[in-house]
Amino acid sequence: EADDDDDACKWNLARLWRYLDDAEGPGSGEAVRREVRDLVVKTLVAAEAEVTPASHRAIRARRTLVAPKRPCFELFGFDVLLDKRLKPWLIEVNVSPSLMGGSKLDRAIKGRLMADVFHVVGFEPLDPAVLRADRKAARHRRDRRADRTADRTDTDKQLP
Image 1 (cartoon, rainbow, N blue to C red):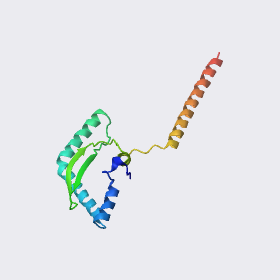
Image 2 (image 1 turned 45 degrees about the vertical axis):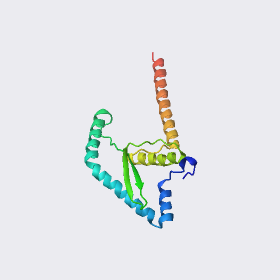
Image 3 (image 1 turned 45 degrees about the horizontal axis):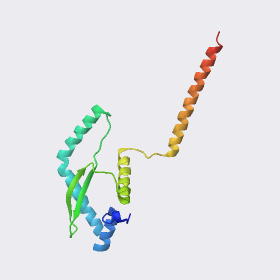
Image 4 (image 1 turned 90 degrees about the horizontal axis):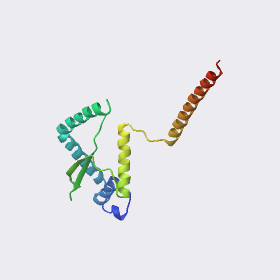
């Protein structure tokens, strides 16, 4: 959590839930979280008739153009407003929301979001030790091939 001047009006969700519990009483944060979750689910259900065919078209286009049998996904950003009774109201849904961050808090939140997205779609985090081992193994294979080529060349030179 950042308390920079840039972030004065921005909180991460954990901070919001804590604030609601403190200001409105224990369990308030969880109650609002459930209502927001219901709002998101109902919005996705309502949009399913539009989203599903668009997803299928995107998958078919991607299979023919780029990568056969590769899954695709869409990231949605939900803008939600809480009224004074803590009722959530949907403002808008952003398709492919910006993942750029101007503040430390934005970068922290969006960085974690990207890590979650990569995990869901099957990317594995880069392990520098594994990368070094892979590079070493590749150099070893190249060296062995070069040695075999040199041995064959030497043998060819010795033949009458």
